[in-house]
Length: 59
Length: 479
Image (cartoon, rainbow over all chains, first blue to last red; front, top):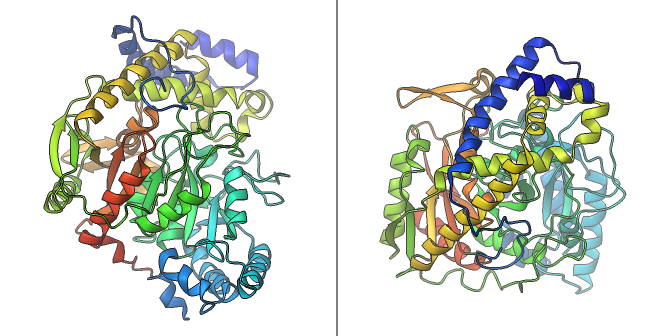
């Protein structure tokens, strides 16, 4: 994760310190663990919701 | 009319008197401006006052009413607008340093509709930086304080709006709610806060980057449920400028207010909310449910199998959508975001596209689970928030409660947003109504939720509860 953030740092010019990179990486890793649980759900046949403007489950 | 009377009056009380020409909109507006002058230095609820514009609007309203051209219940009613809704010719900062001097050349649709209804715009309210948090401790414009205890936060991100309504510095306010930013401050300040169904209210003119496209809504703060219905009636409906606004017909939201609620069935969601009720919240919420039962509501436990994944869905969708709006400023002015927000945006840039898509798929699954539950019950009731923490507790990032350390910000998002995000993810209408008070006098909110576009039912139940419980009649003990 630190490498990804270093790449973003260079691309965007954030001028992050090493301490900041570590902090963001830690936060991102914590969130990533939470996101991994989404991949454990069986979503076969379920399309993403991209537009929410109607009644019912088709929203 | 004396200033003190303002504290006990609602739009519903005042509108007929304005219509009958017993109360002058100019006099009313002056009283509110005087009250703002007195309390805003303490509460910091307003960032920008539009006194001249308000008085000009009030004079116009008065002339029209005197000529017999009465526009409806909001005519001559002083209101405020959160500072992330575009207001023509009026500074719109979104609580940010980057937009400190931005003055839009257009109004948000909601602002236009309120103007057309004759409402008087008093000013723009303080908010969390870019609506990106729940405290309204703003690094650039200062913290808004809770009228019930000025050492405490009002919640957020629409904290200025909630504080302004609670302190009678306006009769209603418009906020935005991407993760609970209307309902949480409403609960912490003891006022009514509505997040309507997704698409019910146009979000055209909302400052980009102050919410995710999938989860953000505009919402309403008022003192009473009836007032909330009147404001929604004015701002709801399809807007050609917002492609995500719904063409579902707008109901008469006041029609069922006052009707009995006996026999309706409310669902209580198993598990998820238990760990979120800290301190006295649990007992207060239980008492509120008891009161609903006394009004004839039946309750049933319901299960939403994937509810624990809601924080993951909320964060994977709204953070990614939100950061896409900040790309330009992240490249050009990254240090003009507070460090907390900058780090969050950088984190959002690391979230893979596949995670975003899977989150949207799980989101549909969760919507289906709520839909299934709402076939068995007409409503869902939940607690909204913890009692408002102190500014000091927020600055250190945690509070002690239930024998444990409660961290306010975690991977799942803001701690008090966890109670409200289920209805950002699903888009269901959700209203916070005051349901009690802690032993130290801090308000607690209960959330009443119904199926899509059933705001009328939400109002009916919330009004019946509000009148029976009478928490709405309490006023903050301003120093």
